[in-house]
Image 1 (tube, one colour):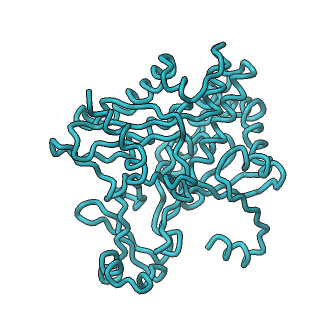
Image 2 (image 1 turned 120 degrees about the horizontal axis):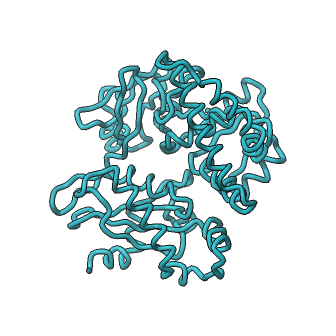
Length: 367
């Protein structure tokens, strides 16, 4: 659908099939896009690469201050757009202008130098990350949709963005929340059914309404927030229902963490498997004067385990004790699409991961 819109608008497109920063950043520098469409993972990689560069250059303190100012600035702009605030103060504007010269221009340069707007989809983006990029001069519009809804069903409109949400229904689309919180969609862009599969069609379509399998909430202005996947809800042996997404996203906020999968279905408590961001780990070791280690050595490093534990503790503050991660294990290798553990949009294939790492999962419950 994006390509159809591009062709109709005579827009020049660049494609990069590899969703990793090492392949993407050089192409962004060469192509110099004015608009960018990606999954949140890519924006996280751009941000983390900028943070590591600042640390290497001994500018960690100024960079973190720049991040704080960008978030406060974008938050104030958003509040003004909604009529609940006066906008950035004079002092905040001055600080923002200073850091635009020192930091934000470098962020935009890493994305080609001409970009002002971007779109994110495929999974939920952290509100603070969206605010940071907006404050740094790259406004990211989050949206939501499925193949079955012919792409976008909701989107944040220009001038009325609410960061942390996937926006309002696009014209012609209706969003309804079922009693269990499942998102249902209705409109002319909803598909008619699965080819030669009436059983799947009947399970998904209900009098023209598309049952998405996603869980969400609607605020008073009709902005949708995705809270999880219906089929991903874990139920512990004690009967506690846990949505893993919020825990996994918070653990992944730590710069050393690449992926996190929460397990615990029919188990006495919640646990997690964590993979590492190799570039971030190499940087972390170098900054601390520690020797480079093999993946097998890294998973046994006490200092690294302490860092990951901090991420887990931070995630646990978002949920009750019964929903918290009690134990975790660091894996030597990341989950990859090549091994059948990720979708093309980098979503976790939970059943495949739990099967591939069934010994590691069992070990989490032996103690």
